[in-house]
Image (cartoon, one colour):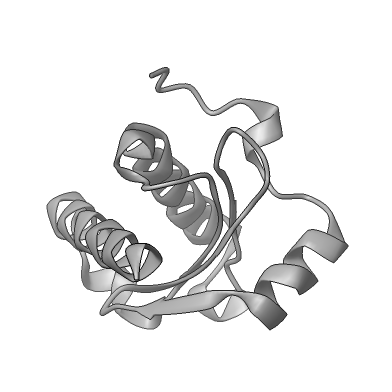
Length: 117
């Protein structure tokens, strides 16, 4: 599986966001919240939502880069094609890459077990 993040793997339309917010399931972790919903495509998609409460543009963009990197490198762990929305919490500022990676992989395991039931 390719580790690239193709343009079609990003959620951009407002109706897609609204569908995930209203019908999606939530994983609440220490550093982030993930909203997820199965899609009818052959690939998973993601979006990152970072509010201005996290700081200036430089900080918000760093969080977005980290989130896209987590998704890009761990696509193969997703159980089925999903739409994901990644929402960081304030605690993400104290996290390092290793902590984020571990929590993201744990989140995918929980999502996998929840989607099988």
